[in-house]
Amino acid sequence: MRSVTIAVLVCALTSIPAFPEDTQDTQPSTVHVVKRAFGPMAFVRSAMGALIGQWKGTPEEWGGGMKGYGRRFASGFGGHLVKVGIQYPVARVMHEEFGYTRSNKQGFKARLIYALEATIITHKTTTEKKTLSTSEIAGNFGAGFISRLWQPASTRAISSGFTSAGIGFAADAGGNVVREFWPEIRHPHSHAKALPAVAAPQTSSISPQPSAELAPVE
Image (tube, rainbow, N blue to C red; front, top):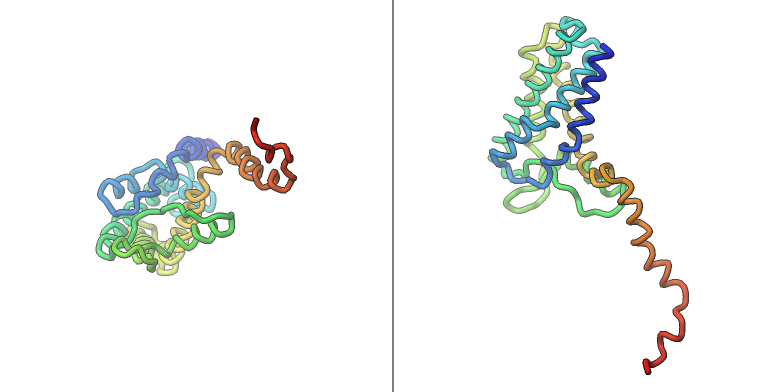
């Protein structure tokens, strides 16, 4: 189990730099669908979900070890493909943006709220107005219940489908937050150095200017 955990964490750490790559591509295109379905983050999310299932021992029928982990990973990745397969046509039909676009808001709180709201709120591609993300809702609930078809008996209950959908929403919310703050996460030192440069004009304007600047040039 320890070796499995280490392998998954290494996979996550090496693949996370590609995580925000599906941002800014809001038009539901075939290229974007393939990218969302088989991109590095799809495998990372499935691996991490399988790791959590392995730690909790669910479904219990799948046991432990590499065999049990492999089943959980395959199940998670299968659910991910079902979700994307539902989201894409629904987004096309409903003229909804497909993906996440970073905000232009200022301040941590405003950006955090924007990222969390984007889990279920999107924009129309025709009018750019806000709308309920029916594709996101359909994708998570569809994947949550359809994945019960290959799950063992202990997880085929309707309540398990709702639980799986809820986990999907939570994962999407967390993903949006990471995408929103990715520049600061990836380059924390460069952003920290930029702050004094921005604040400098404000502090310098407080001190009086030398009167020599007003003297005519001879």
